[in-house]
Length: 261
Length: 221
Image (tube, rainbow over all chains, first blue to last red; front, side, top):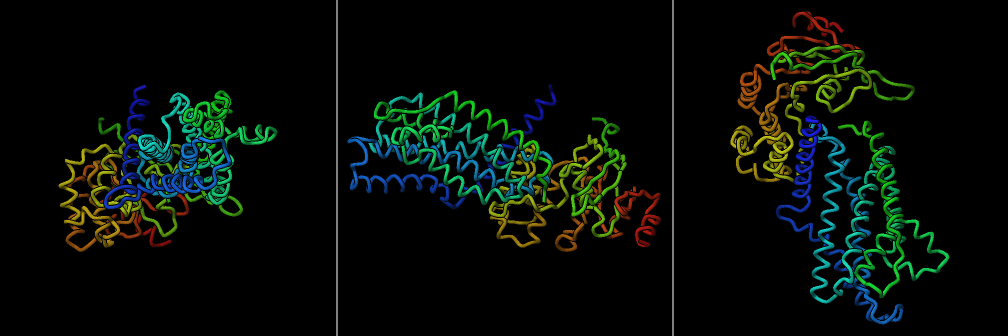
C-alpha cells in the first residue's frame, strides 16, 4: 500500500509539472495567445447575432439564439479540443520519456486535465459575461447544465484516450482522418440545431451520439421550457463507461509502442 | 538505504526491433550485476546497440524479454537536451526538472546559474541560445539532481577546455562514489574513470578483466 501511495504522489507531481510546463509554453510570458480561446466563440456569437437580426423567421419569436450558439459551440469544442490536443501532445512530448518518472499516461492525463479545465473556464467566464451583459438570459436550471457538462467532460476524457491510442497504433495516420471526422461529429452533435427541429424518423439516429444528449441537457438548463429536450442520462453514462473502458484498454495495449525518440 | 542493497541487475535481457522479415536482435541475453559505486565502461562500434542499452538501463525502453531490477536512482543520459522546450526560458526548464525529480529549486538555482554560465540569458527562451549554451544548461541540470547512478552516452566535449575540466570535476570528483555507465567509442575517458570494462559485440556484452584486454578485443574487430 505504501508503494501505491508513493507512486501516486510521484504521479501527481509529474502531472502538475507537465501542466505547468504546457501552460507557460502556451499561454505564458509575453504573449496573449490564450485570448484566442475566448475570441473564437465570441466572434462567432457576434456574427451570428448580426445575421440573425436580419433573418429572423426560422424559429419562434424570442428564441435565445445567442445562448443556443454559445452552448453548442463551447460544449462540443470541449471534446474536440481535448482529443486533438491530447493526440498532438504525445508526439510533442516523446523526448520527455527520457525522464523515467514521466510515463506516457502522465502526458495524456496532464493534457486532458489542462484542456478540460481551460475550456470549462472559458464556458463559465464567457457565460457569466454574457449573462451580465444581457446577451443571454440567466439559466433556467443549473442542475442540467452541470450534469450535461460533466458528462461531456467525461466523454472527452475517454475519447481522448481512445483516439490518442488509435493514433499511436496507426502511426499518426489517424490524425489525418480525425480532422474531417471530428468536423462531421461536431455538426452532427447538434451544434447548430435542436433535436426537436429534426424530422421524427431521423431523430433516433442522431440520438445514438452521446454528445447530443449532453448538449440537449446543457441547453435545457439554459432555455428551460422554450425547448423540448431529448436526452437520456443513463444512455450517456453507459456510452461514457464503454468509451472510457475501451480507451484505457487500447492505451494499455499501445503503451509499449510509445517509444522515446 | 544501505549501499549493499543498491544495485542494477539484468537477467537474460533481450531487445529486438521488428524489421522486414523478422526481428533484429540488438541485444542478446545480457546478464549483468552492477553494484553501487561500480563504474562501468562500455566500448562499442557505431550501431552496436550502445544507445539502446543506455535507454534500457534508464528505463526509457522496456526490453523485449528478460528482467531488470533497479534499486538505484538512475539518471537520464547526462547532458541530454531532448527534453528541452525551446520556447521556455532556461529558468522554466530548470523548474520543470526540479518539479519532476522533487528537488527544491531554491537550493539549486545558484549552482545551476553559476555552472551554466548563462548570465542574463538564464531568463531568456532557449531558442535564443547558442548550441554551447544549451549544452551547458543541459549539463548543469543533469548535475542539479542527485542520482545514485549516472548514465553517460558519449562524453561529448562541451564548450571550451576550462568548461570541460569543470564538468569533469563536478561529475567524476564530486560524485566519485556513485555508479556510472559510460558508453563510448573513445578510449580515453573509459580508461580513466572506469573500473569494469565491457565490449558490446554482436549483441553480447562481454566483460574483460582490464582495459588493455577490452581495448585489444575492441580494436581487433
